[in-house]
Length: 156
Image 1 (spheres, one colour):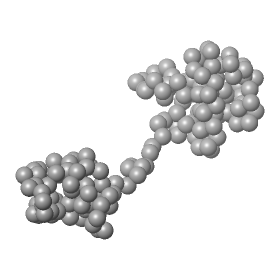
Image 2: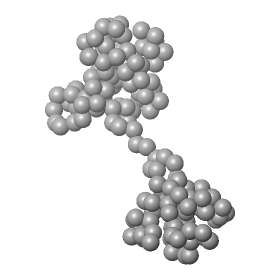
Image 3: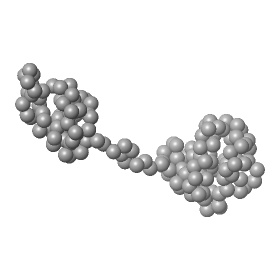
């Protein structure tokens, strides 16, 4: 019952009706329906709620799920839709080191003459030489292979 005291869930009548509609009608994702049911079960505006263990057992979720939904409800400022919908992530979460300029430099290197003592470029040889060039970030041989394949460049 700690999360119910720390982050109480108080729903307005309109929010409650919307959550009931989400759980009973329409085609929605299972996780969205589950979070709506959790919010309805944790709602303290209609009276005393059951203990965390009883709610978790009745809904078939873990106590951690109850805590996370209550936390998200508090973080969104009581916005029911933001709580039950999937969280939007930043795309991409980590910017790719491969830009158009990097691709161009890599393709130019792959099309040039191989170093002395080598008959042709290999992905691992390109990887070693990419590490020596300051304009190109260090790339793995598999990344180099994907870039070359995307641009239909064959190492011959």
